[in-house]
Image (cartoon, rainbow, N blue to C red):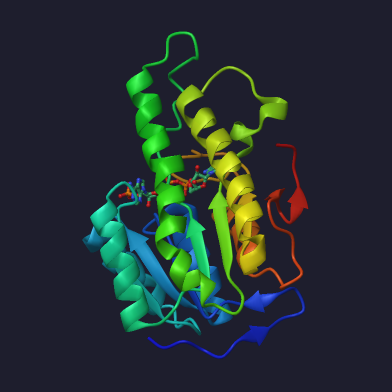
Length: 246
Ligand SMILES: NC(=O)c1ccc[n+]([C@@H]2O[C@H](COP(=O)([O-])OP(=O)(O)OC[C@H]3O[C@@H](n4cnc5c(N)ncnc54)[C@H](OP(=O)(O)O)[C@@H]3O)[C@@H](O)[C@H]2O)c1
C-alpha cells in the first residue's frame, strides 16, 4: 500500500493515509470504507488481528480506490500502540489522519448513584486514555503531514449541556474525551493539526442497537472531520458538520 498524492475535493482534502481505531466493525469499519472509497490508504486498527484481517479483506473485495491494511491495535496497550504506529510509518508512511473511534461500555444498566466505579475506570481507560495515548504516539508522524487531522469520535452523551442520569461510565468518558479534544486542539494549533470531537448520532451498530440511523450516515459525520480543508475548524464538537453544545 502506498501514499497517494494529495487530492482536494470541493468539501475538503482527501487524506493520504488514515488510521482508524476499533475498525473491525460498526462505525469504524464504515469510516474505513468511506475513506478508502475516496482514495485514502487506510489502516484498519483492530485489537483482535484476525477480526481486523477479515474486515480488511471484506473491504478489499469491494474494489475501493484506496488500499486497506489491517493492523493489530489495542488502545489500552502501550506496546501494541507503539508497534502499530511504527509499522504504519515504516510500511506506508506518515499519518495524515487519526480517527479515535474505539470505545466500550455504553452502560445502560447503571445509574450515577449506584455505579460500579471499576466500570467507570474501564471506560475511561479505553474511551479517554486510549484516545489520548493514541494522539501522543502519532504526534511525531502527524507533525510531518501537510494536512494533519485528529478526529475523536465522541457522543452527545458526553455533553454537559444535556447531561442527565444514566450511562454514567460512558458519559463521563466522553465528557473527558471532549476535554482532551479542547486541550490538544489548543496546543496543536501552532502545528496546524486540526483536532475535533464528532458525535455520529444514534447509529444502528452493536453499541447503538436497533432503531438508530444507518451506519453510513454516522460514519459520514466522522469522515467530514477527517477530510476538513486547511482552514477548517479545530477544537469543536460536531455532528453532521454542524456544531453541537459541549
Ligand atoms: N452507535 C452509536 O449509536 C453511537 C452513538 C454515539 C457515539 N458512538 C461512538 O462511535 C464509536 C463507534 O461506535 P460503534 O457503535 O461502532 O461501536 P461498536 O459497534 O461497539 O464497535 C466498537 C469497536 O471498538 C473496538 N474496541 C473496543 N475496545 C477496544 C480497544 N481496547 N482497542 C481497540 N479497539 C477496541 C471494538 O473491537 P472488538 O470487536 O474487538 O470488541 C469494536 O471494533 C464509539 O466511539 C462510540 O462511543 C456511537
